[in-house]
Image 1 (tube, rainbow, N blue to C red):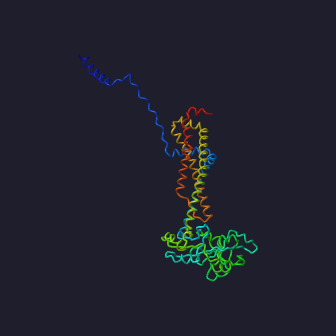
Image 2: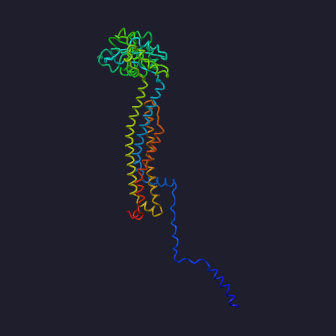
Image 3: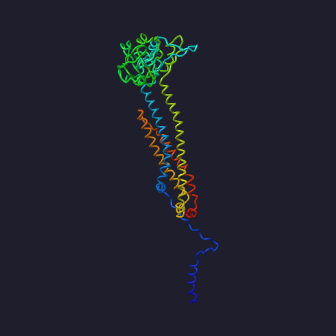
Length: 427
């Protein structure tokens, strides 16, 4: 009894100790967890990409140069075109769009019509018209001396002009003075800016040969963007042109300015006002439209140059892709070592893609700076306002990122597919 009593609790404790679950012989042990690869932060990716570029500086500079040339070409083309357009817009703002010109058209028989001698007086009677003036072609030439043949005109025309011409055109006199009530009756002439340049006249007081006598230069005009025909003309008064140069008194061009809001209304009534009998023989135009057409033509030419810049950018992208492929081939052992130390394919792919983006970004930044400097230098030399549109800079950045991504995809995929053992065994 005693022995059995003593053994009872021991047997019970032994049973309690062994009462846990017995291991299932058919159950397989859980596989060991593979360590998760370390994640690379954006700064780590940039450092890894930059270290790959620093190892080959000469090749990097030459490859980035292709991208820089393409971006610089595109920025410069857009910037110069935008600067030119801005200059034209400023000229339009300064000169206004309310200037209209009236000129003779053709008769129903195809002959050149003539404006009546009373045309200017009729235009001045239109209510909204603020100022009006006229010029008339004179059938003669102007030459520096009487020794020059009459046929050699240098593209300079002789025109009779009324006294209010400068007021209507809002022009200015660069040197000397404009025609007045006294000088318009005397053998005195005012030269347009281009006419003076072609005649070699740089000051007033000199004489030029017109018709069969000498005329004294009393003034040289400033450039007139809205009336380029005046820039190429020698201008004399109506009275002296009729008296000495055989002018018939019929105006060939009438210039008028009216209120901005009344331009279209005045334009509609001008033909019938100038020539009530034959309004269809009168042509009315607005010189500011010519400046707008020049801006449109400059935009079309810009598209052609942008195409050339895109070709240069494409060539630069091919150069970046070539550089990255060679870099992958030369760095096989580095890639194999990184893979052996635990780098995943994705991390290798990101590293080489980052190198391609950094290489393209280097060329893009350099190209943007060069393009902006070229734009500023050209604009300042032409006395234009330098303009580089923000969208052009944004487009350059976008193009750079696109080129870097496209150029780096294949080399990055090729590097990621390398086997560590095969890469390390490469001599």
